[in-house]
Amino acid sequence: MSGKSLQIEDAARGVGLSFHADKLEMSFRSPRDNVTLSATVPMTSVPPQDEAGQVKIAERAARALPQATRIVNAIAQWLVSSREDTNHTYHLTSRNLAHLSHHLAMVLKASAKDMAAYMAEAMDDAGLAAHVAAMTAKQPQALRAVTDSVPRFGRRLGWYAVARVLKPRLIVETGVDKGLGGVLLCAALLRNAAEGHPGRYIGTEIRPEAGYLIAEPYAAVGRVAYGDSLTTLKGIGEPIDLFINDSDHSVDYEAEEYRAIAPRLQDGSMIISDNAHASDALLRFAEETGRRFTFFREQPQDHWYPGCGIGFAYR
Ligand SMILES: C[S@@+](CC[C@H](N)C(=O)[O-])C[C@H]1O[C@@H](n2cnc3c(N)ncnc32)[C@H](O)[C@@H]1O
Image (cartoon, rainbow, N blue to C red; front, side, top):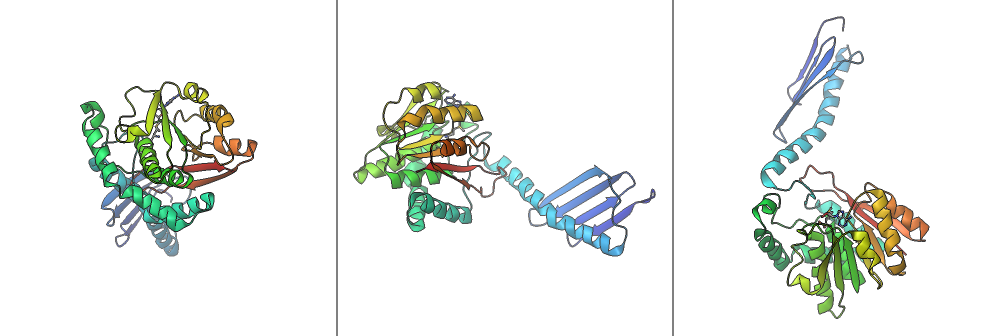
């Protein structure tokens, strides 16, 4: 650059690049997301000097930058439309839901159409949505201030479909939080019972204020066992048909949970990890116990959070 600066303005693409001897200033105005971004970085290599190179760098910037504005736009939307600051909830994109139907069909040896129908059953359950809204409204202000009253089940819809297909007699979920996954699983159990397949839900939770969604009518089939998850799991003496790990997300604790429930598992048991996007604990457990392992990655719709997924271990 020999001390001279080079300006590239591509108004059509919304890209502005200003190369100086020691830094690059970049700006981007995204009409689609209504977001303006700018960044300044130190110059670490010589920028393109010729005409073709200049055009190409604006093109390349315009190809990459919308990835960032999509997230920034979602963050801005989230700031004004959600109160949540942890355990974020969101809907899945319709394509991701279709992929989940097919993934479940493969794991459960069922039809993707039936899987989609089960998930639609949960999404269309007006009584369940009203319950979540009503129970949220009853919570203390400090909790309401960080809670959305509209249920957005995301990947938990996959848990629901598993519960509807397997008709489990006992579901254990570790880590309940408000109870969004728990109440959804109880809703599945109520439907199973109405079809002649009764079952129970036990959620483990260390915080006494958690689990408020597990209330009537869902409390008829489910309860929260308060205390450390491992202690509760070691006290369960009957077969577990569906197990969902979602408590302490450290890899060691997760692995310890699988070891604790191993004697309670049967060939037909399904083990789900809500941590499989970040840990290999379930994968390892599956390998050690002669089970298959597969992972479904969720894709949140209109949310900045990248999503997690569902780890499945089964025979
Ligand atoms: C990610 S949240 C669970 C989300 C819930 N499964 C859902 O569907 O929304 C994790 C929960 O695990 C609880 N937890 C953390 N460590 C625990 C432990 N050792 N024993 C029991 N619960 C624990 C936390 O209090 C928190 O509510």
